[in-house]
Image 1: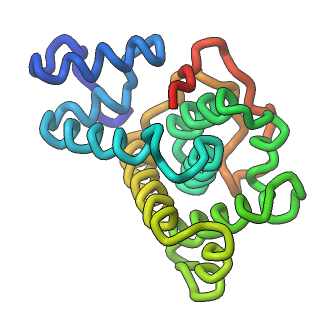
Image 2: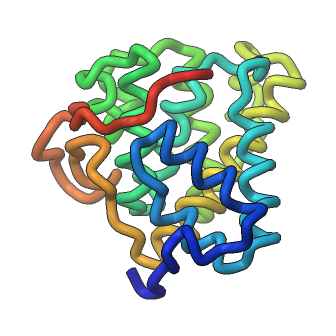
Image 3: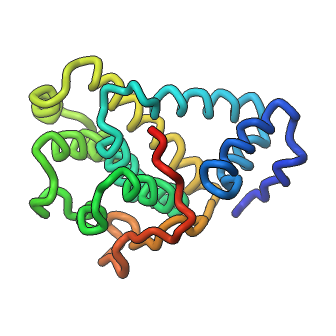
Length: 203
């Protein structure tokens, strides 16, 4: 990592519950969290925002949310995010075959029309050279109501924030999932497979 995180015990006491919860959920405190926490108030705001986006009552299906976050993580070349989000995706019932097909999501035939519309929207939002056009947005509206689109847009924007932060600081994967390379980076050497340390799906 380009900046070393502190030990989680050296952060303010009021951040300790965030770290304890991560250790309970993932088995370890996340390296990315320890970097964000070097600015404690910023970290608290980011953690609360993520909790609102990835909540049980979201109008978006949990598996769809994770498909989108893995794709955005791949496009932004963030190994930490691909690792963590792929492990979550597996635990939300998506097969390793479908995860392996994400670099070819347009042509693989393994994704539903609603998933394709959401993935296309995520790709367009993430790649600045594309951008979101009216045709893509109209396609999205065939499968999602307006409030769900707001949630989806917020999720994609948040994952771009997260993955760009981690990629810029060279946060490595923590071994939650055996991973292929990022989108556009050549063939995948391994199908995503659980390492035994991945997060439980409690959403």
